[in-house]
Length: 279
Image (cartoon, rainbow, N blue to C red; front, top):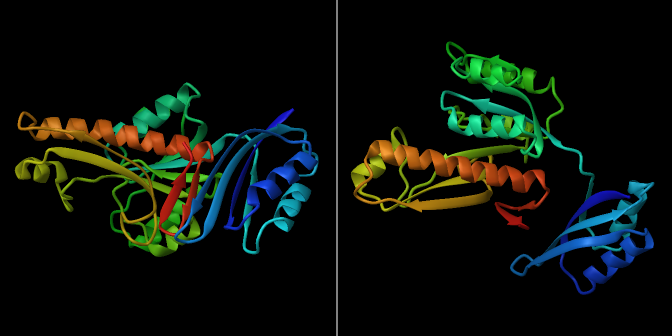
């Protein structure tokens, strides 16, 4: 008896759930959990189904499901093998540390295949946990040369996702296209928002009462890709810049790890510039 997750997105119409469950029953698959969502504005249907059973020919199940769904439907059959990831970093350690500790104790839901950094500061820590660290400097190189070197390392491994754990280089559209839908980023998001250098200092000077962080998929539009998850925390006049930085790092770790958990458990659909997340 094996476990199988099925993800379906398609135009909405009457009878979809009936058609889907009938096909699964015919293949002797038992539905353990099923979540659905209808995007009424776009007339789109999404479902995540967890099944158990013995499936000898997954391709035939996929074909049968597509036969019973509207045109332009998408079906993914996913076994429960762990995802493989590469992590990109610059100087800040807090998000990387959270990922590597969870990886060390097998609670990440994925395997970290490598860490790539454009500075050497995190090399010793990474390698102390048995993960290869690849130092690729960006200095005195144009973007295309730097990114080609990064790709060369990533492509040595068959990774499912690339995690930007406070990686402070803007990726080119060509790089993003090569790994479309596979790059996850974390960034601070303040209300109001502050861009540029020293965002926490700007927030302190403005006297903000809420700080937050956002995890999202990377697209060509900087920090505007589909949002996976967000959190905020309250601050007050007692918070200096150091306290805001500390609080900000804590919430960045929380948001990134939550987003990764959702992705690794196949709970996230991307629909245009939005996501549907089945928690």
